[in-house]
Amino acid sequence: MNWTRRDFLTTSALAAASLPLIGCAASKNQPKDNPMANEIATPACNDYFCSKFGVTDEMIDKVLAKTLSKGGQWGELFFEHLSTGSVNLLDGKVASGSASIELGMGARCVVDDQVGYAFTESLTIEDMMRAAEAAAAIAPGVDAGPVNARKNAEFKTWYDTNYSWNDLDIARAVSLIQSIDQRTRTKDNSIVQVAVGLTWRQRVIMVNTSDGIRATDSQPYYVLRLSIVMERNGEKQSNGSSVAGLDTFEAITEDKIATMIDEAIADTQILFEAVKPKGGEWPIVLGAGASGILLHEAIGHGMEADFNRKEASIFATKMNQRVASDEVTIGDTGLLRGSRGALNVDDEGTPTQDTILVENGILKSYMHDKISAKHYGVAPTGSGRRESYKWAPIPRMRVTYMANGTHEVDELVKDVKYGIFCKKYTNGQVLIGPGDYTFYVKNGFLIEDGKITTPIKDVNIIGNGPDTLSKITMVANDQKFDCGGWTCGKDGQSMPVSLGMPSVLVSAITVGGI
Image (cartoon, rainbow, N blue to C red; front, side, top):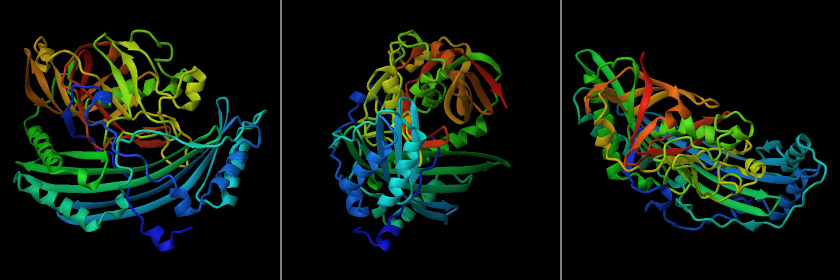
């Protein structure tokens, strides 16, 4: 190994937080056509695990062979080096900072739909062989597959693979969040508390498979978050905003910071004027951007192929059937440059793509990893993701979006006599199989006699994702991608994701107070 212990321990950064809330600029194109999505580089770290940790091709061949030693059809080794860090400010003072490092390898043996998986935190040949042997024993087969010569996967890149958050001077991070704290406080005298935090994670992965794939990627994540508390006449209100990405420190631009501050303040101020709306079943306009959380949670999960393969999703029998009006097109993409949910290559070594799930109302595809793709007889969609080397990959969302429609936003509200316009959400709960959901609306407005009027608070919207999808009657042309620090949980694994959509009119959703 070429790294000293000191070199290793000084490589640090921290896991991203999950605080939604800042919208990107509107786009009139789907991600595959988005001008942000351009090739910027080719991966430059193909020898990373060899040069840093002494993992040679000979070692990889030997360990891969061990994963197939009990008759496995297909084997995989997943290497990961993750360094994470954070610094947090509360009321103008540094409240906390942290750093951590993870290093390890996961071995997977696959026989049809059966998976054997084991991992090690040591990259010595002895420990990797033991993990591979355990994986092979969990999923024994009859005819062992071969270990083929591997070729580097070719893929475009949507973020700077040469950048490393490990090189960040912590003083720069502290200076940044201090300036945000000071700028925020000058905006409104009723602000009584400000919390600002920057978290980052530098993730380097390498995938080697028995069928001849080698893929390496370096992923620089960050989340900048702001939360505030205001007090007026003894009443307190709180809100926040965040900006996140798979990008560099320099990507945190003045425009992004100003937008984050202004949004957090405006969304808090308006809560002092907000009223509690009437409960009942009303027409709902889901606003552009952050409303993509409903698309993600209540609909997107149901289109992940493992739920459908196991017949746990309501969409399992809906392929090539109508699930929405012909105005609705939904996709999931890895190809949005700098987005928190973007990916060059998934955690199985498959280059990512733009996957159309629903086209003009017809269900066209699920999100596939390699196992589900084989089950359905289709190509994987680059959706195989895992939280770390300690987990086997499963189908997961990346950037889930709805494409633009043909209507202006004013058209969505003009015929609504009484309803709700939803802007920002927190504390959602979803039953993934049937798609039943409840979301707390943090910011929204009444719609009265065709106009957006009074701000609202203390309200939940309650419904069923597939039912809501079928009740979308108009789709606007104001598509927006939300740039907040979204994190998705599934089967105990958390993954960074992004989302976006235009404003849509849903004919009826249940509105309930709290």
